[in-house]
Length: 363
Ligand SMILES: NC(=[NH2+])NCCC[C@H](N)C(=O)O
Image (cartoon, rainbow, N blue to C red; front, side, top):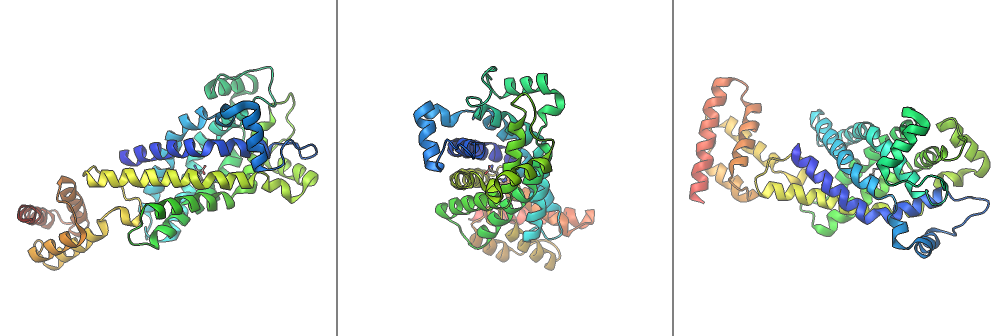
């Protein structure tokens, strides 16, 4: 669990660093005035921000996602992993779908205030001239003072509505792509992560546009919209379908490198922990050798008492399993599944441990 948290934390941070400038462009485009647009498109928007505000303009508001992303990613990867493992058929895409959807709901409670602060900081130059925010916490405190507790959770429903399809498609597409390859290399993992990010935004983009508008709304003296549907309907009447796809290009442009970086760092940390025998949690099919250990335990069940030396060595050399403490622990845990009765379990554990020790001494 702790490894998942750390992997999520660093993966998220890497993703934010790579993706934030694109996010700023996205928010600027989403909230541009359609009748009198400041920006002609993604590149023009990027250039304009750079000219007016330098590189700082692109990194405005980064502190909020940076601070919140550890928590959000811990929730996302923690909930996702646990729900997925609980399911009847953990390797099916359906289980990734439900685990992702549940993770989407869970992270919404942190993600929503975080994105509220981010949105208002990103737009602070344009809209709120009286109050200068020092940072995300200052921004949230200001919202709390002026709009109450409810104000800090503005856009929560929209965030959850967005992130159910968002995270379901995120994990399904990543797992799907990873399951296509036996031994994915670095470019492949980057590609899978990038595609997962893009498909996740394609699955929920219109909801994100409405969410951004709701969260940017209370900046003026009077709120323009009184809810999600109201916001969607009013803007649809004004602009039609294109409203729901404002800023999509920059979102997709950002999603690829950001999620490539995120998934890669997560996979790298999990791999590192695996190599160093640090306790880990199943992340994707190829990140663990549990499947192989299952064969091992199954074989030992067939052999009644303990494992077959020959077989143990074969499996170990086939899978290049490193014989460390953690391997023993995993074997122990796995055997427990197969030997529910204490007595049988005890004797088999001892026997299996002996075999592992012997073959590790020999190799
Ligand atoms: N719609 C979503 N929230 N999808 C999940 C993607 C999360 C990822 N951190 C990103 O911002 O690209």
